[in-house]
Length: 73
Image (cartoon, rainbow, N blue to C red):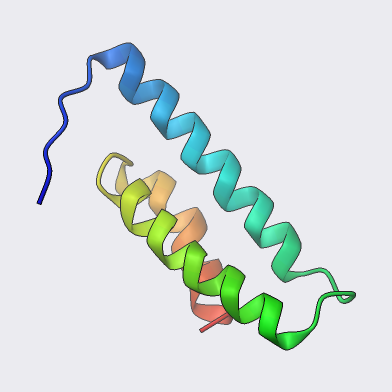
């Protein structure tokens, strides 16, 4: 296990980057042009990024993504 210390500005930047990545993956998961294997790979990556985001996000922010995550399991 690794530990990293972030200051407030870095934490906000990480929050922004993870949120944007989750949004992009949700768009890809809703894209009908992608086949099932690709969507499965995206869903696995989504779960990893979501767990990272869960460590720094408030429950209110997290709820936006947790509901969408259940759809693609």
